[in-house]
Amino acid sequence: MTAVTIDLNDQAIINALRQLTYSANHLEPALEEIGAAVRASIDLNFTGQHDPNGNPWEPLSEATLLNRTSGSGQILRDMGLLNRSITYNVKAESVEIGSMSVVDGTNLKYANMMQSGGKKTDFPWLWGDIPERPFVGVSEADKVQILAILSGYLERSIG
Image (tube, rainbow, N blue to C red; front, side, top):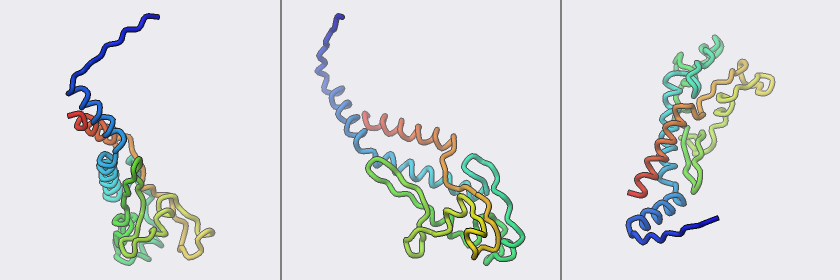
């Protein structure tokens, strides 16, 4: 096998490679953009009353409508606490998205049940079964946007 080695001493290329290496090891700015984008997508899920893929949520039961505090007929939006509780947290190599109470900073206990559903037999205080109504997730459109954010971040990083 024949090998050819070429030394390239172009300072602009060397600087771009250094910046790319730095950026690849410091993803927090890109992850911040991704967290904000997915959070905005979740808002659209609540507004449209559908899951991340656009499938409509199960309608509210009569019992739920009768027990509503606000009288709102919107699904998962009696007083708006659940939607307002969705936050994201950027770490060095990841972004976590979930429910955190805006009142006391703790996990909103019923968020998982609203996302995944629940049975009255498992949660006796409920007035009925809760159907699965996913609101957190990453759709195909979100994936395209995430890739665009990462591509833009890498392009900006090498100037």
